[in-house]
Image (cartoon, rainbow, N blue to C red; front, side, top):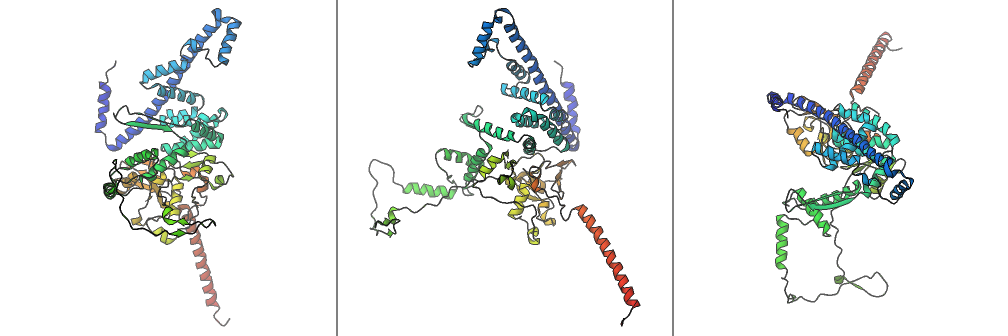
Length: 541
């Protein structure tokens, strides 16, 4: 084994680097790691190739020599296969089993992870070679490659080449993007080339739904819940837990995560509301328990009350019978919190004119049929790109609901580089601060999660810029510039993109200025000609 001391000594030089230089080290390490991951995944796949060949050689040796060559025994093997038995079981573990064990031991990973890497390598080498090349060059990392591999699992083999070329082109022509944006970009390309793949994926995830509860291996006395649900079902459960968690008073001492956990337990017990634990509610509950008679073998005394008059109400039937008000309890208002989740979809898709995919906030792209089903009884808001904002609306700080919906529909998540926070849970930030005269207009608004909003507003050294077309750049304290929204909702929904330049676009301003100058010059020349004529022809004419 070689000594690592020289390497450690060289790496210790990083302690002398400035933050600007260390950011370059991060970029370099990220690219080197991506290239190494490409080589690792390729090696895992090649190991599988060799082990599979050896396995097939063992089978050929067993079937092609000796007593197993008789026609009767070959027919017996065929009958066993037709009955559901594996005629190859007698030859031991398959080549994939051997490769999984070998890769797992070499990388010290679980068999499931080793199998994932082997399968990813096979898809990368034979179906997505151009996309794999973007991993080798450091344009993407292994997490994004695995997203692409999983997404194309339900695509037909005939379409994989087109998907691979389009995806590789999109990766090479766009800046790096967050996982949420990358996943949406992959899904859009698949929907354009192989639309039926989304439906096949929907059928598979519905069949694979499950929920499991098991003890936590790391924390005694604690259990973990895991499961797999279709995106729209998971969104409904998530929205229900969030709405129940938000229904308590602000003084409730529990965190949001704790309230969501308590809401799940309450739903399991058949309770649709979450009891508040603020001081006022707990005191009131304690007082009520003190006023309640203790359970015992003797019946609780009934307090004496004065007789009450029977109140009659009109009967719903004409039988002459009357309803007694005291026997009919008053309707209890429904206080169950209403779950809310957000879906962006083209109106043409909603009306059935096309089957373009929709975007379910926080869960990704869903197929058109699922979107139409979810929106059949939902409250809808129609987003228009030609909003005419009044001077009063532009001058105030808080955007209107129509403006906010347009901004969020045009994005997929927080616009800070790499952030995946849901767009409908973000703040709308003024790129040019409102206090500095920045208008409350879609071209000056972008979604930022609370963490990055505070960092941008109060952090030292961070700067941001938003061009008239909605592209958002961030400059770090070290001077490095990053594109925050390399793929947006405007790429996913082309109807959100306007072909006309905004009125204050620099190119339009330039042409308008030249036109105004020419018009003013013509008017001045005309006025001079008129003045000369009037001077040469004084009245009366």
